Length: 77
Image 1 (cartoon, rainbow, N blue to C red):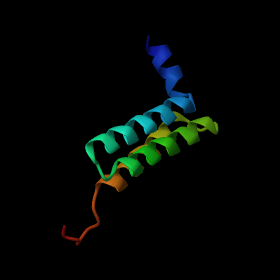
Image 2 (tube, rainbow, N blue to C red):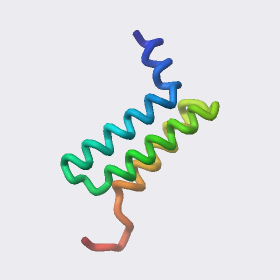
Image 3 (tube, one colour):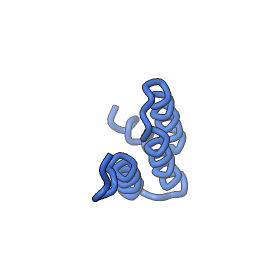
Image 4 (cartoon, rainbow, N blue to C red):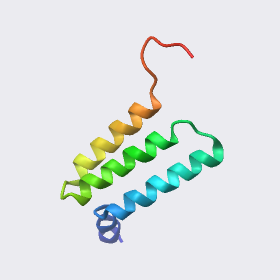
């Protein structure tokens, strides 16, 4: 089971699917950050598809998600 999951994480289509699912949920529930989060997940998949490792993909994806969710310092909403 673990090997199947690990193999799926190495496929770029997994990240494309996750990105589309995140975008769809964002559209359904009117979440403004969803397109940026979906893009970050897609970029992580592009790294894996290009021969990168899962750690690099994870760092890029997490960084993109945090950049999309966290606001700029000093700005009030």
